[in-house]
Length: 114
Image 1 (cartoon, rainbow, N blue to C red):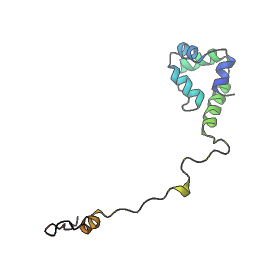
Image 2 (image 1 turned 90 degrees about the vertical axis):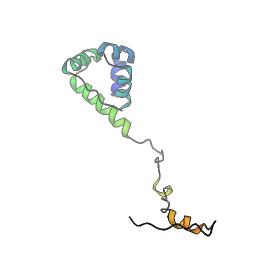
Image 3 (image 1 turned 60 degrees about the vertical axis):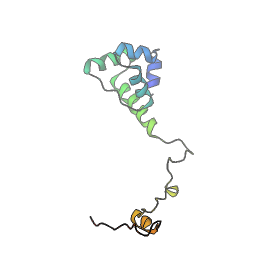
Image 4 (image 1 turned 30 degrees about the horizontal axis):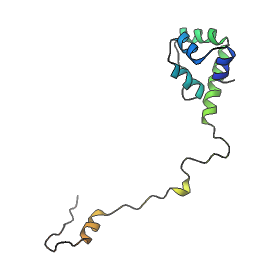
């Protein structure tokens, strides 16, 4: 059971949970999506247990399941940046490129060592 199932089992909407716990609806959405873990004061924690009608173990397991689901890759889903497609380009030596341009014979660049 994840955070969304816990909320739905209690018959609550995200807005109701947010209102009753005095937090933002975005926080509730982030909990359910596994982006963040619920962090609460002890009083809010007890309020959440009463609100979701669950035990501390169920709340901890639901939070953990939401986080774990977020970090699992879906089967067949390609990596975001496949290793074979990343080919770093060689560094460009700008001084040598500028020296190759001979537009005016009186203008020459000198290399300066740092």
